[in-house]
Length: 348
Image (tube, rainbow, N blue to C red; front, side, top):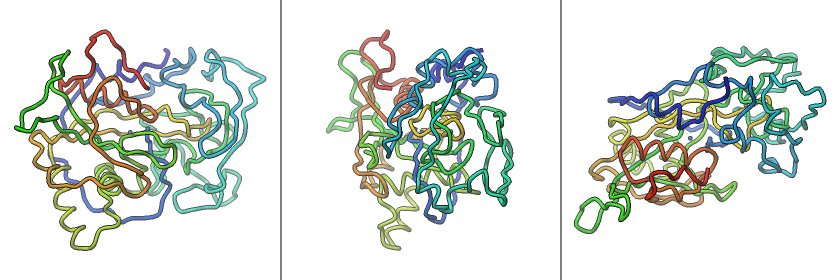
């Protein structure tokens, strides 16, 4: 079975999740490899991410791009028809690369596989580190996990700290666009109301994205979602103690609302390698009246260079798979996406 497009999968399953209560999280210096690449309530499993017939270009393309982010490293070229692991390719010779920042041994990174004191438990919870994949079991070859989406032209971990899945969380905060009188603004062609979301401009690559980041060991996804939004869209790390307490109350109110799980699983991301890849849980928190977000002032922080409200439409060009996530939100909120109903998602 070939990989299934994110939007096709998402259309088959959808649910609301009520009254999630995020807790507090202590700030730890960690790998800010945001999933950046950030689904209507469905859970991916091993039957969805099969590569027996190769990978579709739209589900595994950014992970084939060169140079590798933050470096001059060129991946070995992988033809689309040879991405899948079940396609025999005896001459496959991927480049080996793990960034110096990862090899330095920070708290957020695994040791090298070759180190004698490192015995990771792949495909299971390994102490506080979650090594299970949202997509089911992944294979281990020569002691290294194998990317379930297929070949990438590069082995090692690149910028990613963990061997195997690197779990992230992407909070998608939305509100309705309103005029000066407080009325919802419809699109002039589609007639559907325009939805807005909070977007940040990444410092590392300059692309606009959903605010988000990696899940710390032992941290709940709900805590990661709230923490990352606070750090990147509200600059919570630079607030005084009193400001942080007030901010925490507002964030608790926002993140305790009814919300939508938009996507869970593998993300086509330029940082992925044959042995390390990003998986995310993207969750939509919608401020229906706008009253909660009106009390919060957007301010870029941490590794976000800018932050602003952005109108949702098919003209968006966002980092990694984020445009697909945003399209799913628009569909489930019955909001404007495209003036042409036949237009597919662009800028992915």
